[in-house]
Image 1 (cartoon, rainbow, N blue to C red):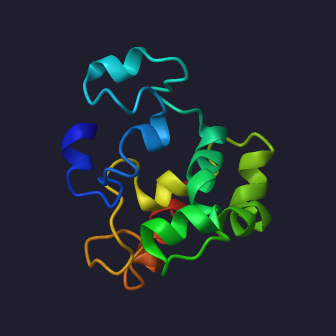
Image 2 (cartoon, one colour):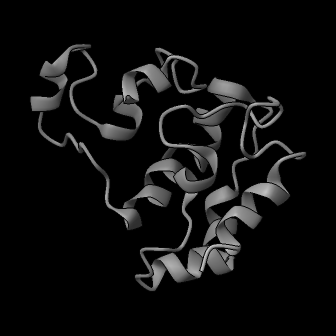
Amino acid sequence: MPATEYQASVHRDDRIGCVGCHKGDPRDPTAGAHKAEGFVAHPQHAEVPEICGGCHSDAAYMRHINARLPVGQLSLYRLSLHGRLSASGDAKAPTCAVCHGKHEVLPGASSKSPVNRAKVAQLCKGWHADP
């Protein structure tokens, strides 16, 4: 359930919140935010990198949130095979959410994070071994 997964997320921050990805009304923490103009319940596959990159490519915003995080990920993703496949319309190409998670986004240093250095090979193998 998204609300339960979100409880442990790095995005569970008043400066980000649900509206950081789903838009809606940031002043309404209830389901009323879902009725606001611009609310996106389920972003389309091709929208995910742009949603994530909207914040993660904004150096000033990221410095305010966590100055240690890099800000070039969207550019690098677009240059990658995964990014090029996604941009060409391949709905099976991995986006940010496939590897990092949708709602429970954990810091990469966390041993529970799927993108922790010790787990990346297993993460990739899980997808690439599936025909």
